[in-house]
Structure formats: C-alpha cells, structure tokens
Image (cartoon, rainbow, N blue to C red; front, side, top):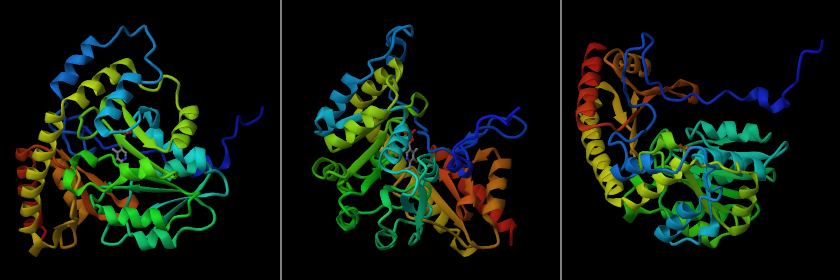
Length: 366
Ligand SMILES: *Cc1c(COP(=O)(O)O)cnc(C)c1O
C-alpha cells in the first residue's frame, strides 16, 4: 500500500481560512460582529427576488449577462471588462494563480486580509508581507519590497482588518511605482462604505491601465454575503484570462437575481453607508473616552473598527469579556494583532452595549 496521493509541496504551508464565529462553545446564539456583515440585512427588493428566481433545476446564465450589464451601466464600465465571481474571494484566487506560480512572489501589506496569504500559497507563489505604517498600507514599504520575482500586488482599500484607507494620490503613486508587468489587485470590498467624495480612483485605474484589477463584492454594504457574488474589472486582456479560469456557472440563479435587485436599490446602500458612519463615529467617540485606560481605535473608513487595548485590559481579556456577554468580535493574535479587536459596526444599541462593556472591563482591569 502506498500512503495515498501527495499534495503539491506548497499546499502544506496553507492554514485554512478561519471565518468569524457565530455561536458560543455551548451553542448559545451570540451577536455576531466578527464577519463584517451588514446589520441592516439586505435590500427588500433583493429579498423578494429570491423567491422569484428561476427554477433550481436550470443552470444559471454562466456569463451573468444581465448583472454585468447593470453593473456596467451603473459604474460606467464596458460589461466585457467585468467578470463575476462566487464572491470576490474567487477572483482573488484566480488573479494570483493566473499571474503567479512557484518561484514568484505575491506582495501585500502586514495587517491586511488573511486570505491573501492563502491565495498566494495556493498558486504556489511565495507570500511576501511589506511592513505596515500606523496599521495601514505603507506605499513606500510596498514599493521597496518589490523584487524581480514580484508578479502580483494586492491592496485592500479600505483595509481589512484595520479599516485604514489610502487616498487616491497614494493608490496612484503605488501603481506608478510598480513595473508594468506586475498585476496590481485593488480589493475594494468595502468601497460602498466610503464617502463617494473620497473615492480612491481604483476604477479609473482599472479602466485606463493594462495591469490593474479591481475587485468588489455584494457581501458587505449590499448585504448579500450568503449569496456569494463578487465582481472584478480591469483591462480586457486580464478579464479574459480570468474568465478562462473561473467556474463555468460560478454565480447561482438566485445570487444573480438578488444582486441585480440589490444594485438597483441604491437607497439601501446609501442608508447602510450613512448608518455605518453615524454609528461608527459614536462608537469611536466612546472609545476615545477610554483613552486613559490605554484604549484607542485605528481610524476606519470601513464597517468595522480595530480597537487597540494597550493598557491593563488586554485584547484577549476584552475579547473573552465581550464573548461572555454574548458579543463575538474578531481577535487576531495570529496576525500580530493580539492587542486588538476588530469589531463590526452593528446596530447603535449593540455598539452602545459593547462600549459600556469595554468600559466596565477596562475599569475592572485596574
Ligand atoms: C469580506 C472581504 C472580501 C469579500 O469576500 P467575498 O468573497 O466577496 O464575500 C474581500 N476582501 C476583503 C478585504 C474582505 O474583507
């Protein structure tokens, strides 16, 4: 007997993605503020489209034609330059595996999305982390980390898990400093939460440059995380390459129908953005009041806030104290963030409760 099939050597280095928790060890339901889901749910029009979606026995439109046309019309993009994914995560995998492999490097920032390490390794390439500055992407450090082996650079803007945001000029400077044969992937999963006046220009770069791929998703502000719909846009040549690699029917009937309605309901997206900024500002102010306990937040443009515990209350104690009270947040010691908690912005009531709990925990830790 042999010992069975052997996976490619680079697979051994992958640690499976750890999703945000939703239930306690005892099975008790918890308030889940660990996965950046929309506390307002999704558009009622999208919800109604679920029951109207075509029969499950039929394959979906493999090209998601109506959805790509609607996205193209809304964002001013030729639909031929739009690719749909089963979540934008699928597109990140495709981009890395199409342009990087064994012997190559995939570059991203310290304290960025944990999936990037997995997508780099899955393609056989080496993940390379550039040091962050103030918990955010440091363009100079990123450019300094580029080598002749760098094939793909991935930047989340806003960044997950820290919420930091690079302005348009910094994204442009990063692109301008990269060799033309390096693919720059701009992961804009949280773009809809950013004030439109602060747009980072990613879509303009994707439209005008041969080496930029922008990824976006219906999982966050559109509130369709469970339906798995993401999209990407870049030069036609890049989109054509990724289209050859994606699953033939990667977005289900129901997901296409719901995303189409969700896109049409921009009032819901605006409401989600406004709700998020108001509740986030209130929560950040409550954390500022805990400054004397060594608690502070990283400035965030996303639907979550990284709370740093640098006083007597440790990140671990804050995490377990909130969990005991029924609030699950994201504690990321494996990413060098053991002193921080990433907390999704929930409802105003939930965030007020969390702020009060953190105050009590900090006072008790004296
Ligand atoms: C949530 C998230 C995604 C989106 O994942 P989907 O596969 O579209 O659900 C992508 N990038 C970042 C940084 C995220 O936080």
